[in-house]
Amino acid sequence: MMPRRLFVPLLGLLLLATGNAHARSFGDILRALGSLRICGNAIVDVSSDRANCGDCGSNDPTTFVCTQDQVCCSGHCVNLHDNCGGCGAQFTCANNEQCCPQAGYGLPSFECADTTINALFCGASCQRCPLIERFDSTDTLVGCCSLKGGGTCVMDAADFQSDPLNCGDCHHNCFDDPNRNWLCSHGHCCPYCTQWLDAGPDGPNCYSCDALNRLAGTTLKCCHDYDHCRDIGSDPENCGEACTDCAAASTAGQECIYGKCMCPPERPDVCDSQCMNLWDLHGKYCGTCGNVCYSSSACCISPDGFRPYCSTTYFDIDPQNCGGCGRVCPPGLGCSGGSCAATNPR
Image 1: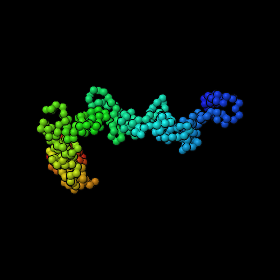
Image 2: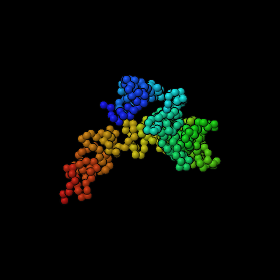
Image 3: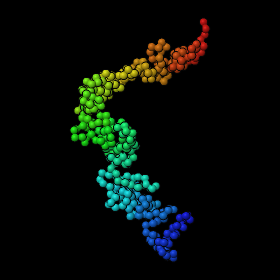
């Protein structure tokens, strides 16, 4: 039975629509109402309702329920891009625009937007970009949609220091610079293989790698034709005069130390072509390469403290590893049978 709250206003609407309280059939009333229908417990306009387009969606969801990229125009599901926010040619988005949903009056509404640069509708998902601080530190905030990837939100103000598409500020594109300054260095467009310096002999300017080395005693080098100045003394991807990529070295885990690819001090040993620390007591390589501690044993420091070893034997008597690695007995107690206990006086 139709709820009273729906029936009363509907009855008044039907009488107004027909102009005749003695209409002969319900079909006459529906024809008089035009595009209004009763779908479930609601009166809907099937000429524009996306969930009931042309007829009640419950009758045939595949026909009368519009998809996410469609809108209902004159009772037909049509392409949203060509009918964005309304029906007809005047609501057609340009080729470089996308129809994006926006909140309005409690209902979804739509707007054409260039999602490659619009911070309110950024990228394929029409994302609203967060407000971040400008590079100039004026405490002003800006939302920035970068051209990268066809529209990507700039999430960190630090990106303004190095992103050539947003150098110093949103949409300040270094590739538009007539002087071929295609590199972004500290928020300034510079030529490749240079770096911006606020205080140099020629004032704030873009200085070459060699000039910076002379000024500050650094070890910078231009490793590639279209690149930044790289610190070949510590850059693991451009290490030494040959600009070696340490990740491609025969031993995995090497770092760039003083211009050479080598294992770092915390992982000085090499096993199975990778840097590791044989004193880490991890059980796979205990003290020497290939010395594997199986489930019945563990890798511990020997009682003399000079080497790792795989053993459970010393757990019975070692006060530094009593019953297990690292279980140290309190002062005055010894280890007997894997438990800390008072030693027998002599």
